[in-house]
Image (cartoon, rainbow, N blue to C red; front, side, top):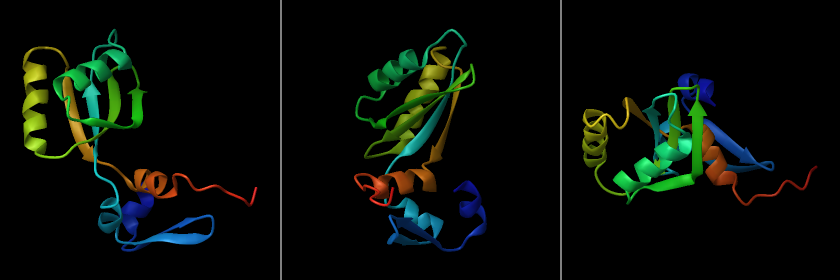
Length: 128
């Protein structure tokens, strides 16, 4: 999906042989609201500790599908959904760095893979 995002002007998403979406990568991403938050952490911090920290500091953020994944020993990927200002969340994360609660962070839009999962949820494959 990442390669399709880079090289395609228009993408069609099929689920069980039926077209469920057609558009530019940006148009398709509008099907989902949310961001991927990559939190740089210390090796001794668990992904659960980071999830609880984010849930405590940004209580209005919903975890998309409760996906919290380790990325090596020093980072955690969290998919978040929330309404309102991204700038306010960045201020909270910056404060967490200053207070030495996290080492750093990066925020990115959710990708086409997430769009596909959203559009295909609840679909059963009867061909298998």
